Image 1 (cartoon, rainbow, N blue to C red):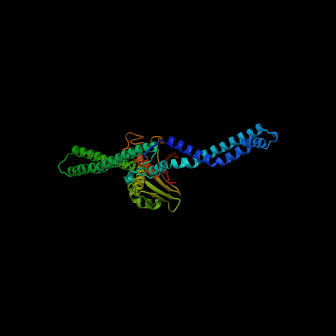
Image 2: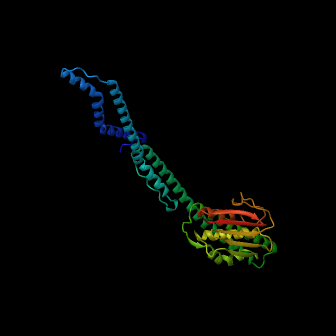
Image 3: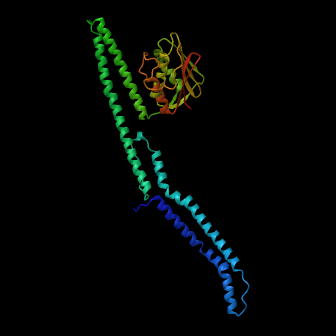
Amino acid sequence: MRKNSLMQKLLTQFIVCVAALLLLATPLFYWLTNNFYAEDMLDIIEAVRQGKDIPKLDLEQDIMQGVMLQFGLITLVLGIAIVLTIRFISRRLWLPFDRTLDAIEAFRLENGVCPRLEKTNINEFDRLNTTLEKMMNGILHSYKSQKEFTENASHELQTPLAVFQSKLDLLMQQPDITEQQADIIQSLYQMNSRLSRLSRNLLLLAKMENGQFGTTEQIDITSLLDELMPYLESLAEGLSITKDYRVPTLPVIANRSLLESLVNNLIVNAVRHNRPQGKIVVTVTDDSLSIANTSDGQALDSSHIFNRFYRTNPGEKGNGLGLAIVKAVCDYHGWHISYCYKDCMHEFKVTFR
């Protein structure tokens, strides 16, 4: 299949369109010539043949009228050709580009299939399709590699950490350990738990970034909160949790495990930044979920609180990934997360619509 540039094909089809229109307009050109240019000459020839006096003629006026009419006709033909070229011919020429756009828009990394872009007889579109296929194949290969890495890391990291923790449990149960040894084992136990949480959180963020949570369902926020409330109260460390449901139900389309992680991390954050004998207020409206907590501290830095490993106080508990996970869950579902501080209360609000 012979290939041409887009400009060459467009110019060729424009010339063909003009030639066809001029051919169709040939009878009209003949009529103009016969009634303006040749009419006076025919009158003169006829008078000479019949031996009559040459009639008075206005050749200049007829020629000017004929020239102007033919100029207008040629302009009309060119105008129609340009309109046809822009509206129909160029649209047909750009159809392969539209099909390429449709294929790219339907491309999903999660499906693991790279679309095959059709071959065309236009150089520019073939170059574009070849480049896009190489790019999508490279992206798909990188995605599969990252997905395989996260899956392997999830298994390989958790297994030795679990073994290490079980060994520490056995050491703690030994009857002849000293108090100093027990303190060392306890610190190692806490460090192992922190490493385990850190690896789980980092892998969770990596999976969200790779789009590995494809399963979604309709979940009622109020029902989910009621189900999680006993566990959330155990996380609250004695702080009171007040429910303020302003609507009976709030259905959303979400991945259940990610939504539960969002709620858990917001509650844990509310506990860590609370004051003794403080409270946590969980509010549900017709389009949002907000979790607020009392505090004796100052407002948090809203420009950094959702960054990974950011801590307002270097000595506080946690690995600095809780709010980063909350933000990632919201971004994954297309929700909006906001923070405000008023009346000595920190409030995080998730807007679903």
